[in-house]
Image (tube, rainbow, N blue to C red; front, side, top):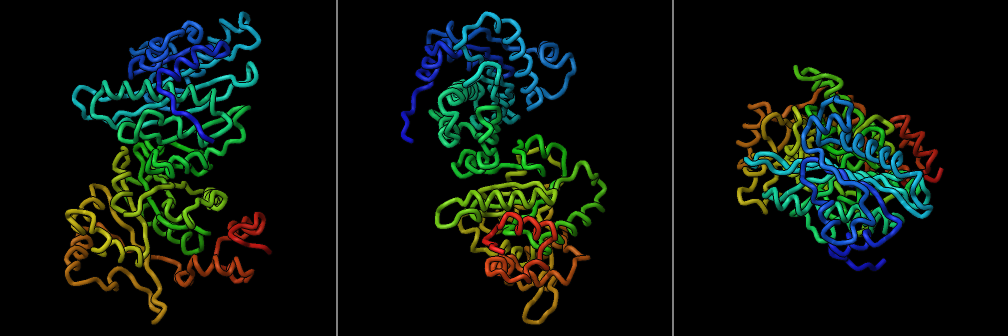
Length: 468
């Protein structure tokens, strides 16, 4: 669908001149930039019932959380704002409104750069709005990361983004692709990243929020998207806050007994860590977007099948556009997590130490190693089967070029790479490619190579080319 990209002022004016749109704008922390955009466009009296900026934390608690203080820039506070403002809008104005009037509430809670510039600007924005029926409210929630190095510029960005979000809710509700693209109108990823979008409600129940997340990564609006074990799109800041993370990269097409054993043994090893607690440790299966592309086209159904299988096995899923592991590690460095463990097999680790992968870095392999092993980060290495000899290969058995051997010894002597033990040796001969080939050729041997839940789901839904 072709569309004209309107300026922020024209979008605000279009909403102001629509006699059916009427509501409240509530903002915390980042100023009143969204409300300002509507007032400056002209005609705002036909659109805005109330604006409010509960800048003082005591006022914010009093208005939105019954005095129960907590984190202010978080999804919970945004939901409290939407709940309170929408209820007030209905209580005060519902009996007086005309049949064609559609109420909305826009809210945001944002942290911009402080005076010392030692924090990361980010925030939550949301709209609760009526689209086709009064009283049947839809809701869109967005999390953003503000990248500009100036608080005033971040406020301008916030104003533009807020107008884009309200405009998209009323003008692009039936086209999720245009909805997402329009959020970045008159903006760039140098200024802002959209790290999460969640849509729901009677007019938006057709939307699959997981695919929205993939589109964010595919369109370059964010480098990664996070799904919890229940398949819900989550903001990584909240998911990883003061958590330990064990991350396994793979294609998972499908997850086999080997993948299952890697998850099991890495978790068992980390349980020995003094900082381990069951409720503060996340296992995460990461899939790079490069592995979801075939002939330049994203196979959306195939993607959802993998996420469903991993979620069914209780796994969180991260979809990223990171090709190199140092980029993955750097991404986790954004968040206030505790420990990070990257889990991989012997063949992958050998590639990690291959100098040819880092020709784009001025410091080459040395620079990459520095980026891959910041504080509280280790690599867990799962053994492999040597098909020629039938022997199991651990990290002490791998062949490394002489000019890289000193790096390997450094990592090993400083306990930055850990060899996983206690593995199920009978499963080491299983490969994902072989399993997929057997599935597609209706060879039942694959059923002994994947967990029973995976077998049952593949058969029921006829996944990955299974015809039965």
